[in-house]
Length: 474
Ligand SMILES: Nc1nc2c(ncn2[C@@H]2O[C@H](COP(=O)(O)OP(=O)(O)O[C@H]3O[C@H](CO)[C@@H](O)[C@H](O)[C@@H]3O)[C@@H](O)[C@H]2O)c(=O)[nH]1
Image (cartoon, rainbow, N blue to C red; front, side, top):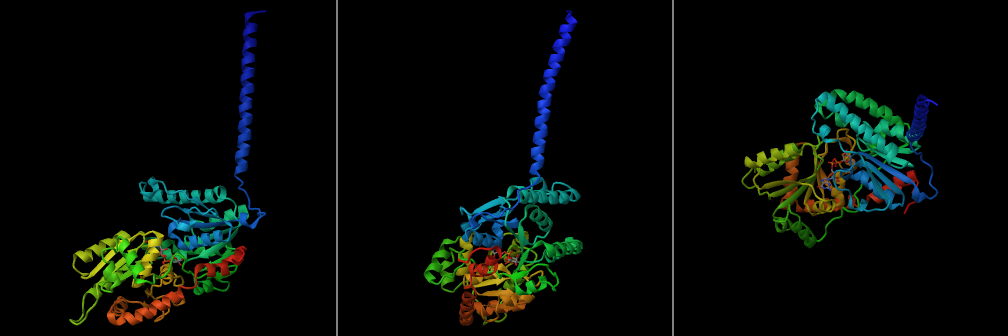
Protein backbone atom coordinates (compact mmCIF):
# COMPACT_ATOMS: atom_id res chain seq x y z
CA UNK A 1 0.00 0.00 0.00
CA UNK A 2 1.28 3.38 -0.91
CA UNK A 3 1.85 6.28 1.48
CA UNK A 4 -0.76 8.28 -0.47
CA UNK A 5 -3.36 5.69 0.45
CA UNK A 6 -2.58 6.03 4.19
CA UNK A 7 -2.72 9.82 3.99
CA UNK A 8 -6.10 9.76 2.15
CA UNK A 9 -7.45 7.25 4.66
CA UNK A 10 -6.32 9.36 7.64
CA UNK A 11 -7.74 12.54 6.09
CA UNK A 12 -11.14 11.05 5.33
CA UNK A 13 -11.27 9.62 8.89
CA UNK A 14 -10.54 13.10 10.32
CA UNK A 15 -13.07 14.78 7.98
CA UNK A 16 -15.65 12.11 8.79
CA UNK A 17 -15.07 12.60 12.54
CA UNK A 18 -15.31 16.37 12.20
CA UNK A 19 -18.53 16.05 10.18
CA UNK A 20 -20.09 13.89 12.89
CA UNK A 21 -19.14 16.49 15.54
CA UNK A 22 -20.43 19.36 13.35
CA UNK A 23 -23.69 17.50 12.72
CA UNK A 24 -24.04 17.05 16.48
CA UNK A 25 -23.70 20.82 16.92
CA UNK A 26 -26.13 21.56 14.10
CA UNK A 27 -28.63 19.16 15.65
CA UNK A 28 -28.28 20.78 19.11
CA UNK A 29 -28.67 24.20 17.51
CA UNK A 30 -31.87 23.10 15.75
CA UNK A 31 -33.21 21.71 19.04
CA UNK A 32 -32.27 24.96 20.88
CA UNK A 33 -33.94 27.05 18.15
CA UNK A 34 -37.04 24.90 18.37
CA UNK A 35 -37.18 25.27 22.15
CA UNK A 36 -36.59 29.04 21.89
CA UNK A 37 -39.27 29.53 19.26
CA UNK A 38 -41.70 27.66 21.50
CA UNK A 39 -40.91 30.22 24.22
CA UNK A 40 -42.42 32.91 21.98
CA UNK A 41 -45.75 31.49 23.05
CA UNK A 42 -46.40 32.71 26.59
CA UNK A 43 -48.05 30.58 29.23
CA UNK A 44 -51.82 30.96 29.19
CA UNK A 45 -54.16 31.49 32.11
CA UNK A 46 -55.70 28.29 33.46
CA UNK A 47 -58.22 28.50 36.31
CA UNK A 48 -56.47 27.54 39.55
CA UNK A 49 -57.73 24.64 41.62
CA UNK A 50 -57.86 26.76 44.76
CA UNK A 51 -59.22 30.36 44.60
CA UNK A 52 -56.23 31.57 46.67
CA UNK A 53 -53.89 30.52 43.84
CA UNK A 54 -55.55 32.82 41.31
CA UNK A 55 -53.35 35.72 40.18
CA UNK A 56 -54.72 39.23 39.83
CA UNK A 57 -52.40 41.67 38.10
CA UNK A 58 -52.25 45.39 38.79
CA UNK A 59 -50.73 47.37 35.94
CA UNK A 60 -49.58 50.96 36.27
CA UNK A 61 -47.30 52.49 33.64
CA UNK A 62 -45.98 54.92 36.24
CA UNK A 63 -44.34 54.93 39.67
CA UNK A 64 -46.08 52.33 41.85
CA UNK A 65 -45.31 54.31 45.04
CA UNK A 66 -47.05 57.39 43.66
CA UNK A 67 -50.14 55.52 42.48
CA UNK A 68 -52.14 55.25 45.71
CA UNK A 69 -55.35 53.97 44.12
CA UNK A 70 -53.55 51.11 42.34
CA UNK A 71 -51.72 50.20 45.56
CA UNK A 72 -55.07 50.10 47.36
CA UNK A 73 -56.41 47.71 44.68
CA UNK A 74 -53.37 45.50 45.35
CA UNK A 75 -53.90 45.61 49.12
CA UNK A 76 -57.57 44.73 48.75
CA UNK A 77 -56.85 41.74 46.50
CA UNK A 78 -54.14 40.53 48.90
CA UNK A 79 -56.45 40.98 51.89
CA UNK A 80 -58.93 38.64 50.24
CA UNK A 81 -56.23 36.00 50.00
CA UNK A 82 -55.49 36.02 46.26
CA UNK A 83 -52.07 36.44 44.70
CA UNK A 84 -51.42 39.94 43.43
CA UNK A 85 -48.75 40.81 40.88
CA UNK A 86 -47.95 44.51 40.52
CA UNK A 87 -46.37 45.62 37.25
CA UNK A 88 -45.00 49.18 37.24
CA UNK A 89 -41.98 51.38 37.85
CA UNK A 90 -40.22 51.07 41.21
CA UNK A 91 -39.21 54.66 42.02
CA UNK A 92 -40.50 55.79 45.42
CA UNK A 93 -41.31 53.64 48.45
CA UNK A 94 -44.44 51.52 48.22
CA UNK A 95 -47.24 51.42 50.79
CA UNK A 96 -45.77 49.75 53.92
CA UNK A 97 -48.45 47.01 53.93
CA UNK A 98 -47.37 45.86 50.48
CA UNK A 99 -43.80 45.29 51.57
CA UNK A 100 -43.14 41.77 52.81
CA UNK A 101 -46.75 40.76 52.09
CA UNK A 102 -46.58 37.08 51.04
CA UNK A 103 -49.46 37.52 48.57
CA UNK A 104 -47.80 40.44 46.75
CA UNK A 105 -45.08 40.28 44.09
CA UNK A 106 -43.73 43.25 42.17
CA UNK A 107 -42.63 42.81 38.54
CA UNK A 108 -40.75 46.05 37.90
CA UNK A 109 -40.63 47.72 34.50
CA UNK A 110 -37.06 48.54 33.47
CA UNK A 111 -36.24 52.22 34.01
CA UNK A 112 -35.08 54.16 30.98
CA UNK A 113 -31.34 53.85 30.46
CA UNK A 114 -29.43 57.06 31.17
CA UNK A 115 -28.69 57.76 27.50
CA UNK A 116 -32.45 58.02 26.92
CA UNK A 117 -33.43 59.64 30.22
CA UNK A 118 -30.82 62.41 29.90
CA UNK A 119 -31.80 63.17 26.32
CA UNK A 120 -28.26 62.75 24.97
CA UNK A 121 -29.57 61.84 21.50
CA UNK A 122 -31.15 64.38 19.14
CA UNK A 123 -34.89 64.91 19.76
CA UNK A 124 -35.97 62.94 16.66
CA UNK A 125 -34.00 59.87 17.82
CA UNK A 126 -34.65 60.23 21.53
CA UNK A 127 -38.46 60.10 21.33
CA UNK A 128 -38.60 56.86 19.25
CA UNK A 129 -35.94 55.31 21.53
CA UNK A 130 -38.09 56.15 24.54
CA UNK A 131 -41.20 54.67 22.94
CA UNK A 132 -39.44 51.47 21.86
CA UNK A 133 -37.76 50.96 25.25
CA UNK A 134 -41.04 51.50 27.12
CA UNK A 135 -42.96 49.28 24.75
CA UNK A 136 -40.41 46.49 25.06
CA UNK A 137 -40.16 46.47 28.88
CA UNK A 138 -43.96 46.57 29.15
CA UNK A 139 -44.53 43.87 26.56
CA UNK A 140 -41.80 41.52 27.86
CA UNK A 141 -42.90 41.90 31.50
CA UNK A 142 -46.60 41.35 30.81
CA UNK A 143 -46.13 38.61 28.25
CA UNK A 144 -43.28 36.57 29.74
CA UNK A 145 -42.11 37.66 33.20
CA UNK A 146 -45.36 37.98 35.16
CA UNK A 147 -47.49 34.87 35.56
CA UNK A 148 -50.73 34.68 33.54
CA UNK A 149 -53.45 36.51 35.42
CA UNK A 150 -57.13 35.80 35.83
CA UNK A 151 -57.77 39.57 35.78
CA UNK A 152 -55.53 42.50 34.88
CA UNK A 153 -56.55 45.79 36.52
CA UNK A 154 -55.12 48.62 34.42
CA UNK A 155 -54.67 52.27 35.32
CA UNK A 156 -55.62 54.80 32.67
CA UNK A 157 -53.93 57.25 31.98
CA UNK A 158 -51.46 56.80 30.41
CA UNK A 159 -53.39 55.13 27.60
CA UNK A 160 -50.36 54.89 25.27
CA UNK A 161 -48.75 52.34 25.11
CA UNK A 162 -50.79 50.60 27.81
CA UNK A 163 -53.97 49.91 25.82
CA UNK A 164 -52.62 48.14 22.75
CA UNK A 165 -50.03 46.13 24.70
CA UNK A 166 -52.62 45.05 27.29
CA UNK A 167 -55.17 44.21 24.60
CA UNK A 168 -52.68 41.90 22.86
CA UNK A 169 -51.34 40.31 26.07
CA UNK A 170 -54.83 39.69 27.46
CA UNK A 171 -55.78 37.98 24.20
CA UNK A 172 -52.56 35.94 24.03
CA UNK A 173 -52.64 34.83 27.67
CA UNK A 174 -56.39 34.51 28.14
CA UNK A 175 -56.72 37.14 30.92
CA UNK A 176 -59.73 39.35 31.53
CA UNK A 177 -59.26 43.10 31.93
CA UNK A 178 -60.66 45.83 34.16
CA UNK A 179 -59.74 49.34 33.05
CA UNK A 180 -59.66 51.74 35.99
CA UNK A 181 -60.33 55.18 34.48
CA UNK A 182 -58.70 57.75 36.81
CA UNK A 183 -58.90 60.42 34.14
CA UNK A 184 -58.43 60.70 30.36
CA UNK A 185 -54.99 60.59 28.75
CA UNK A 186 -55.96 62.95 25.93
CA UNK A 187 -57.21 65.71 28.25
CA UNK A 188 -53.96 65.53 30.22
CA UNK A 189 -51.96 65.72 27.00
CA UNK A 190 -53.96 68.76 25.93
CA UNK A 191 -52.43 70.68 28.86
CA UNK A 192 -48.96 70.48 27.31
CA UNK A 193 -48.97 73.16 24.63
CA UNK A 194 -46.06 71.63 22.66
CA UNK A 195 -47.80 68.26 22.36
CA UNK A 196 -51.28 69.63 21.63
CA UNK A 197 -51.18 68.69 17.92
CA UNK A 198 -51.05 65.03 19.00
CA UNK A 199 -54.29 65.26 21.02
CA UNK A 200 -56.69 64.13 18.22
CA UNK A 201 -54.56 61.01 17.64
CA UNK A 202 -54.34 60.25 21.39
CA UNK A 203 -58.09 60.77 21.75
CA UNK A 204 -58.85 58.44 18.84
CA UNK A 205 -56.52 55.76 20.28
CA UNK A 206 -57.94 56.10 23.81
CA UNK A 207 -61.57 56.03 22.72
CA UNK A 208 -61.28 53.29 20.08
CA UNK A 209 -59.10 50.84 22.05
CA UNK A 210 -60.71 51.83 25.35
CA UNK A 211 -64.07 50.79 23.91
CA UNK A 212 -62.96 47.18 23.54
CA UNK A 213 -60.22 46.71 26.16
CA UNK A 214 -62.07 46.29 29.45
CA UNK A 215 -64.33 43.34 30.19
CA UNK A 216 -65.42 45.79 32.88
CA UNK A 217 -64.51 49.39 33.64
CA UNK A 218 -64.19 51.49 36.77
CA UNK A 219 -64.63 55.25 36.94
CA UNK A 220 -63.62 57.59 39.77
CA UNK A 221 -66.86 59.60 39.66
CA UNK A 222 -70.47 59.16 38.60
CA UNK A 223 -69.95 62.00 36.12
CA UNK A 224 -67.10 60.08 34.47
CA UNK A 225 -69.07 56.82 34.49
CA UNK A 226 -71.86 58.60 32.63
CA UNK A 227 -69.46 59.73 29.90
CA UNK A 228 -67.93 56.26 29.61
CA UNK A 229 -71.12 54.19 29.54
CA UNK A 230 -72.93 52.98 26.43
CA UNK A 231 -74.69 55.99 24.96
CA UNK A 232 -72.15 58.38 26.55
CA UNK A 233 -69.22 60.16 24.91
CA UNK A 234 -67.00 57.05 25.03
CA UNK A 235 -69.79 54.55 24.46
CA UNK A 236 -67.85 51.66 26.02
CA UNK A 237 -68.98 48.18 25.07
CA UNK A 238 -68.83 46.62 28.53
CA UNK A 239 -70.20 47.68 31.95
CA UNK A 240 -68.88 50.72 33.83
CA UNK A 241 -69.02 50.97 37.63
CA UNK A 242 -68.21 53.96 39.79
CA UNK A 243 -65.54 53.22 42.40
CA UNK A 244 -65.17 56.43 44.37
CA UNK A 245 -61.77 57.01 45.95
CA UNK A 246 -61.95 56.48 49.69
CA UNK A 247 -59.28 56.97 52.31
CA UNK A 248 -57.14 54.01 53.27
CA UNK A 249 -56.86 52.98 56.93
CA UNK A 250 -53.53 54.81 57.28
CA UNK A 251 -55.43 58.15 57.21
CA UNK A 252 -56.98 58.77 60.63
CA UNK A 253 -57.90 61.99 62.44
CA UNK A 254 -55.69 63.00 65.39
CA UNK A 255 -58.07 63.78 68.21
CA UNK A 256 -55.86 64.67 71.14
CA UNK A 257 -53.81 67.91 71.23
CA UNK A 258 -51.03 65.97 73.00
CA UNK A 259 -50.75 63.51 70.08
CA UNK A 260 -50.80 66.43 67.64
CA UNK A 261 -48.00 68.16 69.57
CA UNK A 262 -46.01 64.97 69.75
CA UNK A 263 -46.14 64.44 65.98
CA UNK A 264 -45.47 68.09 65.08
CA UNK A 265 -42.49 68.15 67.49
CA UNK A 266 -41.00 65.14 65.73
CA UNK A 267 -41.44 66.18 62.07
CA UNK A 268 -38.36 68.17 60.90
CA UNK A 269 -40.55 70.63 58.91
CA UNK A 270 -42.68 71.56 61.94
CA UNK A 271 -40.65 70.77 65.06
CA UNK A 272 -39.63 74.39 65.73
CA UNK A 273 -43.22 75.59 65.49
CA UNK A 274 -45.12 72.70 67.10
CA UNK A 275 -46.25 74.55 70.25
CA UNK A 276 -47.35 77.65 68.29
CA UNK A 277 -49.36 75.53 65.86
CA UNK A 278 -51.15 73.60 68.61
CA UNK A 279 -51.90 76.86 70.49
CA UNK A 280 -53.37 78.36 67.30
CA UNK A 281 -50.79 81.16 67.05
CA UNK A 282 -49.47 79.81 63.77
CA UNK A 283 -51.87 78.19 61.30
CA UNK A 284 -50.71 75.10 59.44
CA UNK A 285 -52.03 74.60 55.92
CA UNK A 286 -51.11 71.63 53.73
CA UNK A 287 -51.41 70.86 50.06
CA UNK A 288 -50.23 67.74 48.30
CA UNK A 289 -49.48 67.41 44.63
CA UNK A 290 -47.68 65.64 41.81
CA UNK A 291 -46.58 69.09 40.57
CA UNK A 292 -48.24 68.61 37.19
CA UNK A 293 -49.94 71.04 34.82
CA UNK A 294 -53.42 70.22 36.17
CA UNK A 295 -52.67 72.21 39.35
CA UNK A 296 -51.96 75.92 39.29
CA UNK A 297 -49.89 76.58 42.40
CA UNK A 298 -49.62 80.17 41.20
CA UNK A 299 -53.18 80.58 42.59
CA UNK A 300 -52.11 79.56 46.10
CA UNK A 301 -48.99 81.76 45.95
CA UNK A 302 -51.02 84.77 44.76
CA UNK A 303 -53.58 84.14 47.52
CA UNK A 304 -50.83 83.93 50.14
CA UNK A 305 -49.29 87.19 48.89
CA UNK A 306 -52.74 88.83 49.10
CA UNK A 307 -53.29 87.31 52.57
CA UNK A 308 -49.97 88.69 53.78
CA UNK A 309 -50.79 92.18 52.50
CA UNK A 310 -53.33 93.60 54.99
CA UNK A 311 -56.02 95.71 53.37
CA UNK A 312 -56.80 97.71 56.53
CA UNK A 313 -54.90 98.63 59.69
CA UNK A 314 -57.36 96.67 61.86
CA UNK A 315 -56.93 93.47 59.96
CA UNK A 316 -55.34 90.95 62.27
CA UNK A 317 -54.44 87.79 60.47
CA UNK A 318 -52.42 84.93 61.97
CA UNK A 319 -49.12 83.83 60.40
CA UNK A 320 -49.14 80.69 58.25
CA UNK A 321 -46.84 77.74 57.78
CA UNK A 322 -47.70 76.18 54.41
CA UNK A 323 -46.31 72.74 53.60
CA UNK A 324 -46.63 71.43 50.07
CA UNK A 325 -45.87 67.72 49.81
CA UNK A 326 -45.20 65.68 46.69
CA UNK A 327 -42.80 65.08 43.83
CA UNK A 328 -43.20 66.01 40.20
CA UNK A 329 -42.03 67.90 37.13
CA UNK A 330 -43.02 71.49 37.99
CA UNK A 331 -41.69 71.38 41.56
CA UNK A 332 -38.40 73.22 41.00
CA UNK A 333 -40.00 76.00 38.95
CA UNK A 334 -42.47 76.71 41.76
CA UNK A 335 -39.77 76.51 44.45
CA UNK A 336 -37.81 79.16 42.52
CA UNK A 337 -40.93 81.33 42.39
CA UNK A 338 -41.51 80.88 46.14
CA UNK A 339 -37.90 81.89 46.87
CA UNK A 340 -38.29 84.95 44.68
CA UNK A 341 -41.45 86.00 46.57
CA UNK A 342 -39.84 85.36 49.95
CA UNK A 343 -36.62 87.23 49.02
CA UNK A 344 -38.72 90.10 47.66
CA UNK A 345 -40.49 90.47 51.04
CA UNK A 346 -43.89 89.60 49.50
CA UNK A 347 -44.72 86.95 52.08
CA UNK A 348 -44.30 88.49 55.55
CA UNK A 349 -45.50 86.10 58.27
CA UNK A 350 -45.73 83.24 55.81
CA UNK A 351 -43.35 80.35 55.44
CA UNK A 352 -43.73 77.89 52.59
CA UNK A 353 -41.93 74.55 52.67
CA UNK A 354 -41.96 71.60 50.31
CA UNK A 355 -41.47 67.99 51.41
CA UNK A 356 -41.69 64.37 50.42
CA UNK A 357 -42.72 62.34 53.46
CA UNK A 358 -43.10 58.67 54.27
CA UNK A 359 -46.67 57.39 53.88
CA UNK A 360 -47.18 57.47 57.66
CA UNK A 361 -45.80 60.99 58.12
CA UNK A 362 -47.82 62.25 55.15
CA UNK A 363 -50.99 60.85 56.74
CA UNK A 364 -50.11 62.32 60.17
CA UNK A 365 -49.26 65.73 58.72
CA UNK A 366 -52.71 65.94 57.11
CA UNK A 367 -54.28 65.00 60.44
CA UNK A 368 -52.23 67.63 62.30
CA UNK A 369 -52.96 70.54 59.92
CA UNK A 370 -55.65 73.22 60.23
CA UNK A 371 -56.73 73.38 56.59
CA UNK A 372 -56.01 71.42 53.43
CA UNK A 373 -55.75 73.08 50.03
CA UNK A 374 -56.53 71.42 46.70
CA UNK A 375 -55.64 73.16 43.45
CA UNK A 376 -56.58 70.18 41.28
CA UNK A 377 -58.20 71.62 38.16
CA UNK A 378 -59.35 68.40 36.49
CA UNK A 379 -58.32 68.30 32.85
CA UNK A 380 -61.42 66.24 32.01
CA UNK A 381 -63.83 67.99 34.37
CA UNK A 382 -64.91 64.60 35.70
CA UNK A 383 -62.08 63.26 37.88
CA UNK A 384 -61.43 64.12 41.52
CA UNK A 385 -58.36 64.94 43.59
CA UNK A 386 -57.20 61.93 45.60
CA UNK A 387 -55.48 64.30 48.01
CA UNK A 388 -58.87 65.61 49.20
CA UNK A 389 -59.89 62.03 49.93
CA UNK A 390 -56.69 61.62 51.99
CA UNK A 391 -57.50 64.87 53.79
CA UNK A 392 -61.03 63.81 54.70
CA UNK A 393 -59.69 60.48 55.95
CA UNK A 394 -57.38 62.45 58.23
CA UNK A 395 -60.28 64.67 59.35
CA UNK A 396 -58.92 67.75 57.59
CA UNK A 397 -61.38 70.20 56.02
CA UNK A 398 -60.41 71.64 52.63
CA UNK A 399 -60.43 74.69 50.47
CA UNK A 400 -60.68 73.21 46.99
CA UNK A 401 -60.66 74.58 43.47
CA UNK A 402 -64.24 73.98 42.40
CA UNK A 403 -64.48 75.07 38.77
CA UNK A 404 -65.26 71.61 37.35
CA UNK A 405 -68.28 69.32 37.10
CA UNK A 406 -67.51 66.47 39.48
CA UNK A 407 -66.16 68.34 42.53
CA UNK A 408 -69.60 68.28 44.22
CA UNK A 409 -69.34 64.47 44.47
CA UNK A 410 -66.66 65.04 47.13
CA UNK A 411 -66.49 68.58 48.50
CA UNK A 412 -69.82 69.71 49.98
CA UNK A 413 -69.87 73.48 50.37
CA UNK A 414 -70.17 74.53 54.01
CA UNK A 415 -70.22 70.89 55.19
CA UNK A 416 -66.69 69.57 54.74
CA UNK A 417 -64.98 72.38 52.89
CA UNK A 418 -65.21 75.49 50.78
CA UNK A 419 -64.87 75.80 47.01
CA UNK A 420 -63.10 78.63 45.18
CA UNK A 421 -62.56 79.53 41.55
CA UNK A 422 -60.48 82.70 41.83
CA UNK A 423 -57.48 83.93 43.82
CA UNK A 424 -59.71 86.50 45.55
CA UNK A 425 -62.09 83.75 46.72
CA UNK A 426 -59.22 81.63 48.04
CA UNK A 427 -57.74 84.63 49.87
CA UNK A 428 -61.12 85.32 51.45
CA UNK A 429 -61.48 81.69 52.59
CA UNK A 430 -57.99 81.73 54.15
CA UNK A 431 -58.69 84.97 55.99
CA UNK A 432 -62.07 83.78 57.20
CA UNK A 433 -61.25 80.23 58.29
CA UNK A 434 -57.82 80.87 59.77
CA UNK A 435 -58.87 83.87 61.87
CA UNK A 436 -60.18 83.64 65.42
CA UNK A 437 -63.68 84.43 64.17
CA UNK A 438 -63.55 81.49 61.78
CA UNK A 439 -62.82 78.94 64.53
CA UNK A 440 -66.43 77.81 64.84
CA UNK A 441 -66.88 77.38 61.09
CA UNK A 442 -63.60 75.47 60.84
CA UNK A 443 -64.68 73.12 63.65
CA UNK A 444 -67.96 72.50 61.86
CA UNK A 445 -66.14 71.76 58.58
CA UNK A 446 -63.77 69.42 60.42
CA UNK A 447 -66.74 67.44 61.70
CA UNK A 448 -68.03 67.18 58.14
CA UNK A 449 -64.60 66.07 56.89
CA UNK A 450 -64.42 63.31 59.50
CA UNK A 451 -67.90 62.18 58.54
CA UNK A 452 -67.13 62.19 54.79
CA UNK A 453 -63.91 60.26 55.44
CA UNK A 454 -65.59 57.63 57.56
CA UNK A 455 -66.64 55.43 54.61
CA UNK A 456 -63.41 53.66 53.85
CA UNK A 457 -61.76 52.16 50.79
CA UNK A 458 -62.32 48.56 51.93
CA UNK A 459 -66.11 48.99 52.09
CA UNK A 460 -66.23 50.66 48.69
CA UNK A 461 -63.90 48.13 47.05
CA UNK A 462 -65.59 45.10 48.60
CA UNK A 463 -68.96 46.18 47.27
CA UNK A 464 -67.85 47.18 43.74
CA UNK A 465 -64.70 45.30 42.67
CA UNK A 466 -64.94 42.27 44.99
CA UNK A 467 -68.00 40.72 43.28
CA UNK A 468 -66.57 41.54 39.85
CA UNK A 469 -63.39 39.52 40.29
CA UNK A 470 -65.05 36.93 42.47
CA UNK A 471 -63.55 37.43 45.91
CA UNK A 472 -65.65 36.45 48.91
CA UNK A 473 -66.91 39.40 50.98
CA UNK A 474 -65.01 39.45 54.29
N1 LIG B 1 -45.97 59.19 50.61
C1 LIG B 1 -46.29 60.40 50.18
N2 LIG B 1 -47.27 60.54 49.26
C2 LIG B 1 -47.54 61.79 48.86
C3 LIG B 1 -46.86 62.91 49.36
N3 LIG B 1 -47.38 64.01 48.75
C4 LIG B 1 -48.32 63.57 47.91
N4 LIG B 1 -48.42 62.23 47.96
C5 LIG B 1 -49.31 61.35 47.17
O1 LIG B 1 -49.64 62.01 45.98
C6 LIG B 1 -51.07 62.10 45.86
C7 LIG B 1 -51.46 63.39 45.22
O2 LIG B 1 -50.99 63.30 43.91
P1 LIG B 1 -51.77 63.98 42.72
O3 LIG B 1 -51.16 63.48 41.45
O4 LIG B 1 -51.80 65.44 42.96
O5 LIG B 1 -53.17 63.28 42.83
P2 LIG B 1 -54.60 63.93 42.73
O6 LIG B 1 -54.65 65.01 41.71
O7 LIG B 1 -55.03 64.29 44.10
O8 LIG B 1 -55.48 62.66 42.20
C8 LIG B 1 -54.97 61.74 41.23
O9 LIG B 1 -55.52 60.48 41.42
C9 LIG B 1 -56.91 60.33 41.13
C10 LIG B 1 -57.33 58.86 41.21
O10 LIG B 1 -57.06 58.29 42.35
C11 LIG B 1 -57.21 60.78 39.71
O11 LIG B 1 -58.60 60.70 39.49
C12 LIG B 1 -56.68 62.18 39.47
O12 LIG B 1 -56.83 62.49 38.10
C13 LIG B 1 -55.22 62.27 39.84
O13 LIG B 1 -54.46 61.50 38.94
C14 LIG B 1 -51.59 62.01 47.27
O14 LIG B 1 -52.92 61.49 47.28
C15 LIG B 1 -50.60 61.08 47.94
O15 LIG B 1 -50.98 59.74 47.71
C16 LIG B 1 -45.82 62.72 50.32
O16 LIG B 1 -45.15 63.62 50.83
N5 LIG B 1 -45.58 61.44 50.69
